[in-house]
Image 1 (cartoon, one colour):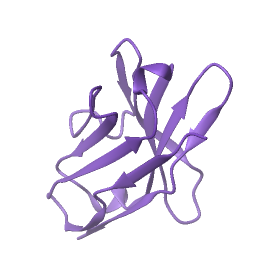
Image 2 (spheres, helix red, strand yellow):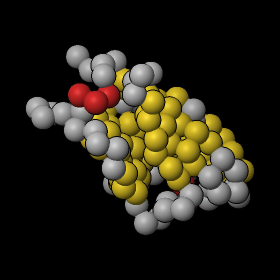
Image 3 (tube, helix red, strand yellow):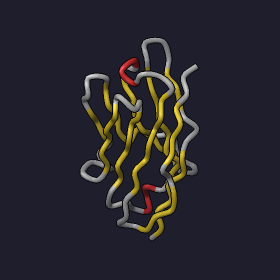
Image 4 (cartoon, one colour):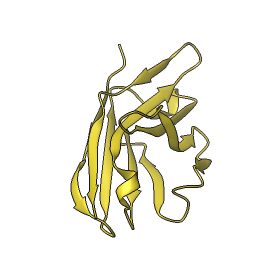
Length: 115
């Protein structure tokens, strides 16, 4: 059973930064793609950023230039560096991993940005 454990969320003022971490229980290159998603109250879960096994990254237009996804293969970690945070970034952030058979979700970490 694959486990993904997020950490690094918290309360931050607008304009501040946070780095989220996702620890995987197995080699991250065994996944086709890993990513960060978020869900605000009353909203659907939405894609924030992804990184493929080949290292290609993609991000939502709303976070381009502010958020960066990265990984440490040896540590089995995926990160989301979030800069210039805005109140509208407030959400539960989830780590997701897809392999050839199924996808997996972490339990989420809360990010709250105050104005």
